[in-house]
Length: 118
Image 1 (cartoon, rainbow, N blue to C red):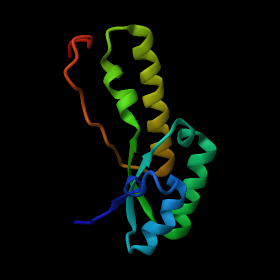
Image 2: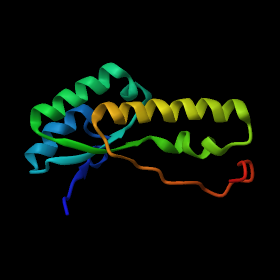
Image 3: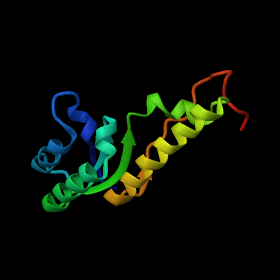
């Protein structure tokens, strides 16, 4: 088994991209990246983050996003909102793919009567 660490461990005191050096200095070579803001899903940010991780020899195994604002609405009955949230989810998954992630961390649903039946 390998033990990693999340960039979220340093929130809100260290920007996500700056955690990579800290993670390496602490002796880890595998991590989860927690994307804390929409600007951290942009391609330029992701490329920079990947470059930093590669330089430090850090494998980014999983991606986790500020999901409380969109995951519950992936199953919303209101189609427009649901479609927007699916687009957001897809952008985050693309970012994870660019980072070489194998996993997306999903917390699942909370009870909400406005969700579609699954």
